[in-house]
Image (cartoon, rainbow, N blue to C red):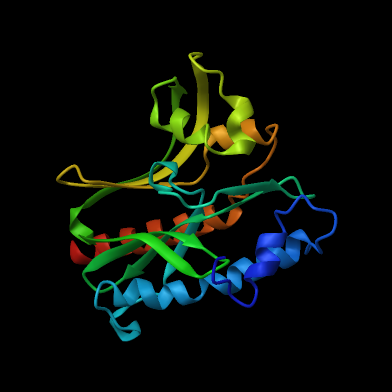
Length: 230
């Protein structure tokens, strides 16, 4: 049994198919998720040896789907709410922090039912080394020997979208990508195309908050690059 947080059981029950379990509404679920994420801001600073006073702006968080390549046994859950928006566990989290000279990024796979942050990684980029931010849509295919194919077969709700040996085309995976002068790329997945297939399509990803966050990141980096060139 997982060591659940005080709200962890409510979050977990949201995904239950049992009619015997009390389930919270979409809005309450979203509020609990926001509450559970607050502790990650401090972690994102500690991981790169920063204090709040070192930062010139508030931290910026982007939530996205989990990195299936790095689930590593984590239990995956997915549900489309009554508002037609997709919710899932765990969460792919990226937090940007901004100092006078550099942008730092913290990424993890976050389980809000336990408040465990897994597969953590940190990055630091000097503003003048950043050459672009792009929001891109990627296309591709899933085939029998593809890593996604192998992982998705282990997730019951996704099995129906995989036909062994059949090529499945997709063209709706969105990413926010930072690129440096040296060609380094930091990618943040905003949507995962295969999840739309698993939930009968529709407007399953809420991207309004992500786009607001992306606009803030772009503005801060653009302003700092302009200032350093004056």
